[in-house]
Image 1 (spheres, rainbow, N blue to C red):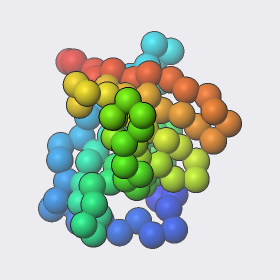
Image 2: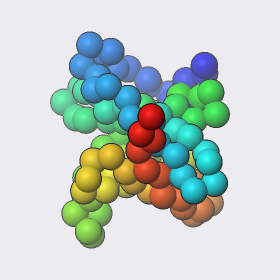
Image 3: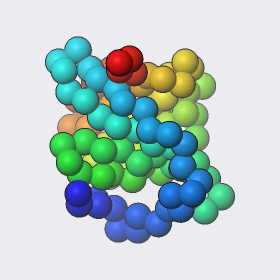
Length: 99
């Protein structure tokens, strides 16, 4: 897997268990919250690539936002779903996969 971040510094000991999520098209992603310095960040696994998304605060709905130059992740209040938006503005809602 290839890291897509200029500074992918994180401590695996301070990670939460990953969430496996899927959108209605069947695309799966894995979201892991972790401590990055004094903030919470997101490690997103998608298409066998790891993307690090930094905390950007809250949006106008009060939902936490994480982003980098390629993606933005909006965490929904249930803490198990969210919306992923790419750099072109294409968005998709993802829900937790229950096995």
